[in-house]
Image (cartoon, helix red, strand yellow):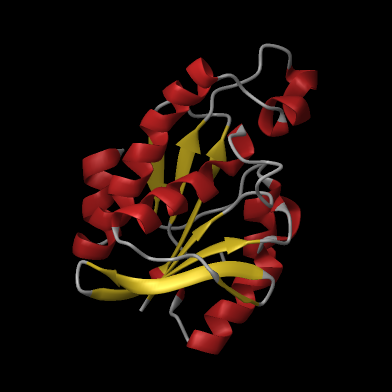
Length: 185
């Protein structure tokens, strides 16, 4: 079984913001594989189904970004999912818009949602997809940049990364993290 987690802030207030790239990737996967995200458990919205003949749970924590791990940890424990099968997807300002980066494991960097996941799981040994959102022109503008509303033109550029992220999830489930990294990094 796989747990595919998109990090973000509760919708609809934060939909179509840069910080919700994880949610947007999970939403796209849910649409493609007809997995309804209608159930709630452990302060998250989730749905289960199959991708590439593998059982998956798609999860969108509702704890707000900085506490994402508090939702993910109970899912991992309850369903006894090995960390190598927990794929976490989130935005990254150090990656250009429309690009993604996959990692097999590693530190959270400056991303507070990723920090929460690492803290709650007490491990950096889980794969992740970082979806590029680019940097703000003024570094002091970072919070407004990630959670502020964006226009349709900007969002359409971000959608390229969302699309790649969804494709990378499928590749990860089908052929593993190493193959997915080789294909998308």
